Amino acid sequence: MNFEDNCYVILLLFSKKIHKYLIIERIFNFKFKLFH
Image (cartoon, rainbow, N blue to C red; front, top):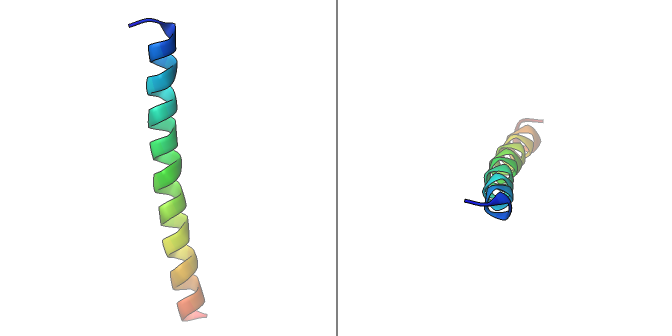
């Protein structure tokens, strides 16, 4: 594995974490709107 591959893998993992976080944030916002 060379440097570009490592960067790609890191970016992929990072984007997945961000995506997960955004989904969680969206769910929280939705519940917040429901209960307030």
